[in-house]
Length: 351
Image (cartoon, rainbow, N blue to C red; front, side, top):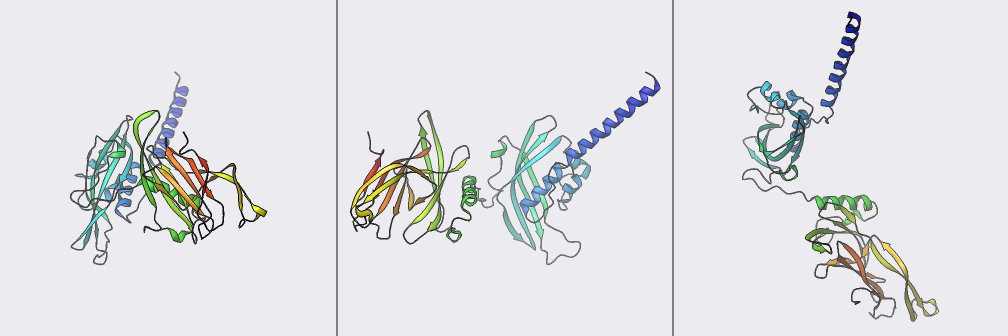
């Protein structure tokens, strides 16, 4: 190989090394930058943001006087084989003592390794906030006092400890309720009466657990049914229903309702009722005065057409094979002061 060709190849090879180094540097900073000491969970996320980005000096500084390793070099070296870290935090407990507030927080992490494997660790961190009123410069913000994570044999989704030490059991997240609530808010946030939202029995969310079997599967399945109050009138309330399943999905229920052709003498609703015919079906995304009957596994809706209640419609939707189906519909179409409904659809008692 002549010297000119050798110099050319060396230049190209050197350029490739620089490009590769540049790509690696960018990859190290792909993770989101989080530097937030506003609460214990935010600080733990900041710690692992720094580790994800290989900013070990920043991670080191989140600890107080008691450091996690003998020196900074040992601390940084401990993450040599780690390519990424995912963190999950649990409920926070706090206790005040001698001008400080101590927080304990359950933590689980999933650490990706250079060989493509993953390691799961779980445990607790203790954080300390010195009283801001009694401090003098330099100010000491919320910091990590200590942390102890141990290897876990559980899957990452189940590795988070329920609590730390003998402290109170932190509240567990109800992800099914969170998803259903978010879906309801997205669909009805501006359509429903916001003043009706609340935690009391009259305005709160109704929550039911349904256990069932499908035709082709002997294993018991579980679903959660949530009922959300949308509007309230003088004698009717409207509700939306959401169903979540074992796979974590959430969907709003849509209800089939018969389309009615009602005839009155002289076309006068106050006159004699001549006929009620089903001429088709519509789909409703809300039901009136509706609730779930756990004994019959049915949602029953009763809509009053006027305050006297003598004219109304009542629908029943039965839960089977993981869904609700219309099985019965009754109509009292006469405004005669009497409660005398007739059944216009009946799959509930049909042979």
